[in-house]
Structure formats: structure tokens, C-alpha cells
Length: 476
Image (cartoon, rainbow, N blue to C red; front, side):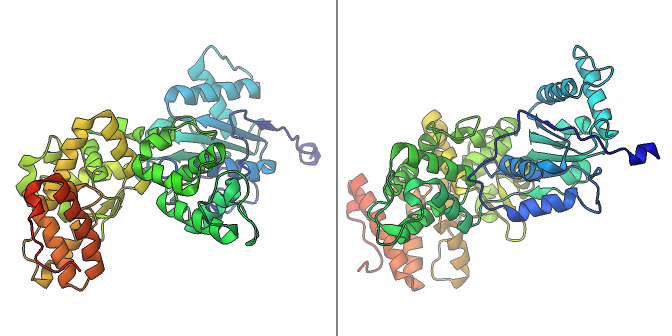
């Protein structure tokens, strides 16, 4: 009865590694609500629930969501501790540091393995901290953390690029995707001085210009265009905001820099809370994937950021002309899907099994393509030529048959981004000509002109033999 009557002793321990609260945090209310619901499910008291993985591609905002959750609910916990989970060593370091703060009986800092287990046992037993939250940030995989999780007793959040939590630990997790367009626009207008709310009769605020547009309408349009080009990727939006504020660059100029060399732009140092160059974000997981998956990744970066059909990629008849190990990857549907699933596991790739298409995020595609061109021009050339070969081989060769319309659609959106329109290969040029004529015959006259006229100018400028080439349809 004395124990029941005695008020509970409240001890607070807040880890120094926890990021400061982001005053520009935007959106993510659905993810935060789902995370709270899962952690507190069927529980009036904060007792143990299964760990909650929060997973998604690099730069998508997983860490920001975990940090925001910790700050929002800090009053409900006696202990909140942040664990850098990139490696086993950093996990043990964090647990040993926590053990020192907890002042557990029998704790021995010189025996790291024993001390880590002692901390986990104390947390599971909820003594001396009854209500606790651990955040394992940037875990490589379930295997990397599952031996260092308390056996119940409190709440655990794990952020990771790996999506295989159900297979490894029977956990569903919460997938984090891009911002909604409205969220990106709201973030940019809060974060960028020149895009902030302004009366329609007034010019833009001091700082970055809005490139001729004035007032709130111009700011909203500029923010919307920037959001579209960045694919609503939170980290890219954060970099853009910092760059615009620090340099006074206008939105149009920033977009031009991004389109000309996304890697160089995102590699530039800006004042954001991020441990590495933004441009290297999507190379981390690639260091841990197979050569086959890496080759597929480079090929996809050499095409467009639009969805890419499996039928366009897997063409066994032409694999003998492709570089190794790409020839093996595209030799059969089985090997292709194995490599694609590996990329998908680390959220480097979106897979749509219903439509049989794969897709890279537009920022990831642009950065990877530009980085390859800068660091390994020969590899960039090989993968670009491989993309052209696949595109040319997909040409059914008959524009009259309506049944071929869908086949031509598969390659159409990749002609310009892949540089196929600049190719001197007769097979590739025949595909381009067929695409232009196919568009014209199907009533897409403006599309036909937008593709055909610039391409013809390129060919005329590049080779005297193309000057006399005649198009098989009227261009005007």
C-alpha cells in the first residue's frame, strides 16, 4: 500500500544527439499520427509496443519525422535517446553512453558488450525509467539493429532506407514518400525570403529575386515551378531554399543550374542540418548493392525520370551489345527483377508490378547521371549508348499499325533525356524519325514539331549528310 500511495519519481533524460527542433518543419501530419497511433496502440500507459520502422529513400525526411515526434511528445517520456545506427559500433557507443547517464548498478564502461546488454535489460524492465523512447537513426537493415533492441518496455522508432522489415522482423513499418506539392510550396514559401507571403501590390522581399514575377502570385508560381522540378523531395527543397537565401540567386537561375548539372549544384555547400553533401545522398546505399544492381541503376539514370517499361529494358536479343554485367541483368525477366528488387529494397527505385514499370526519382536520376559524366565519362558514354541501343531495338518499325502505338509510347519520353536525338547511329535516328511521323499521323502535330524540328537542327549542325535529309511529312 505504501508503494501504491508513493508518488512516482519523475526523472528526465534527453539525449544530446537529438536534433534541435526544425522550425520550418512542414506537413507529415499523416505519418506522425500513424506513428503515434501504432506506438500507443491499446495502451493508456506508455508500455512496450513493437518497434516502428520509418523507411524511404534518402533525403525523403525520415530523420526529421522521428525528431519532430520526439519533440512533440517529449513530455510523455522520462527518457528520450538518439542512436546513430549506421554501424554496430555506433549503436554500442550510444548504448554505453546511455548506460553512463543511467548510472546503472554493475555498469562497466570498459566492458562494452556487457554494458550494452545491461542497458537493454534495464530498459526492458522499465527501471529506473518507466516511459522511454529510443530512436535508431539510419539503420542499414533489420539485421543491423535487431540484436540491440530492448525486449519491450517502451517505444522504439527506427529510420532506414531498407524496406524489408516484414521479412526480417514481421514489422510493417511506415513508408515515407515525397511531399505533397502543396507541402513543398508551403515549405519553400516559409523558408525562402523572396518566396514569402507578400501583398500582390508589393514587390518581392529582399534576397533572392523571383525573376520578374511580383507579389504573392509570382512567389507562388515560382515556388510551384521549383517544387515540380525538384520532384517534391524534401532534402532537395531544403538545399534549394538555403542556396537561394545565401546566394541571392533567382529561382529561374537556380532551375537553370539544376537542369545543366544537378550534381554540381547539390554538391555545393549550404547551411543545412545534413552530415554530407546532398549530392552524395543516393550513393551511400549503392556501395552496398551488387554489381548487377549498380549497373541497372546507371542504365536507368541514363534514361528519363519517367516510368520505364520492363519490355523496353529486357531485350535478350540485343544484350550481346551491352557492357557487363548489364548484359546479364537484361538477359531475362528473372535476373532483371532480382536486380530491380535489390534497388527497391534500399528505396533507390520505385517498382510497379501491376504496370511492369520502374522509376527513379527525378532528382536522383539527374544527380546520378551528372555525377557519372563528371567522375567516369567513359562509363557514362557506355551506359548512354546502351540506353540508345535498347531504345532503337524497341522500334517495331511499322508506324501504320495502331497496335504499335503503345510500343512507341514506351520509348518516346526517353529520346531527349537519354540524348538519343543527338546520336549518329542510323538505328537510333530511324527510331526518332518514326516517332515524329507516328505522332503526326496520330494527330499530335505540335508534339511532332517539338520533337522533330530541334532534332533536325541538331542533325544538320552535326553532319553534312543530314543536311539533305527530307522528312516524310510537312513540318509547318
